Length: 129
Figure 1 (spheres, rainbow, N blue to C red):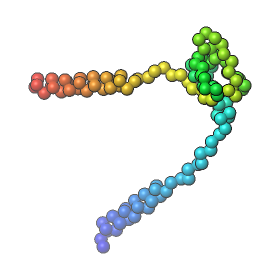
Figure 2: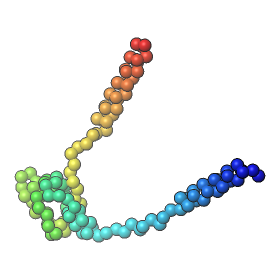
Figure 3: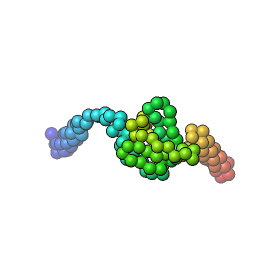
């Protein structure tokens, strides 16, 4: 066995040992569910006053509007010009209302326009050389 075989074997062994070490996975922490009341309180504390919100209530109804005030016990939401006080205990879910982003149709249209522009540009270059 010559020196190149020894070096190649040493490199292969090093790579195998390193790959084995990288293949070891860390233990995944357990996912623990929290009670709904605690989850709603966390949501309430993290939403900024003035945000557009949609509040779904336990009875199945919902309120959309702008968050005016918040406390540990209730929220004040301005909905259709009326100030509504909503107890935190009555909240089933609380979501931010975001402005509509790019829809699938708009994304497809932009992609088609870019593709057509590239196709026309390549055709122009191919025929005008």
